[in-house]
Amino acid sequence: LAEDRKGSNQWREFFWNPRTHELLGRTATSWGLILLFYLFFYLFLAGMFALTMYIMLLTLDDYKPTWQDRLETPGMMIRPKGDQLEISFSVSDTESWDGFVSNLNNFLSPYNDSFQVQTNDNCPPDQYFIQEDSGEVRNNPKRSCQFNRTTLEDCSGLLDRFYGYSRGQPCILIKLNRVIGMLPGKDRQSPYVTCGAKREDSDKIGPVVYFPPNGTFNLMYYPYYGKKAQVNYTQPLVAVKFLNASLNTDINIECKINSNTLEAGSERDKFAGRVSFKLRINEK
Image: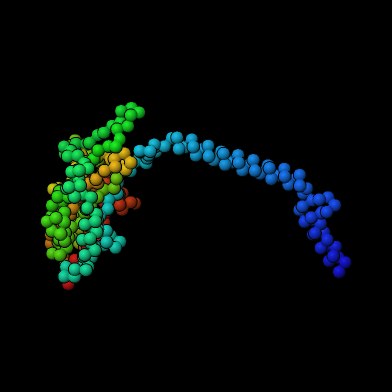
């Protein structure tokens, strides 16, 4: 019992020693000095962090990335995307393709001709729309070229409000991902899209038709200057219409970009310059 009381007294004295006025082994002066040290230490670290962040921000441009890893070939994507890039529907079941139609209507609303005429320019085709800055004077906001919804013809949703889904001739829209400053063609040759079935499904895909003709992304929509510099930029599209695809079977399709400046995509990146999706059209 005596040893227990002795140990308890030692702990109490360590916490607060009334003779030396020490708290946890330190006097008030000692605690004040150590707290003051850490206060200045962390203020110094915070100041260093703020200074480095400030210097880094001075190197950034609000309109284009200071450092940009140039992609050899940009990715591609389709609309409607469906579930995991699978477009599956039944011609006779309206509910099975109604979501695809709504998706396309929403996606194409900014492409309406009336909106494009108000916001964008009617540019000469087959040449780049270059809008360089003049030294330190920025040429912003930069203008953009019109991409009118009527350009997609049978896949515009204007001639056929169901985009062919009600007849088993679906339209798929393809877009090339935006890359600031990319020049995707030379010698007035625009990049174009081609779609085909994978080898095992080559006899199922049937004929396809492209809108605009030849499936081109016209050069006048490039280069892209960034969302902040080119506020009204309208991304060009290519529509693919499948006229007589086989029914009641899966068709694995790949669409790819063809260009005389962009390299073919690699096997390691399945979205570089191409997009693969599955199409299934059920009769009932």
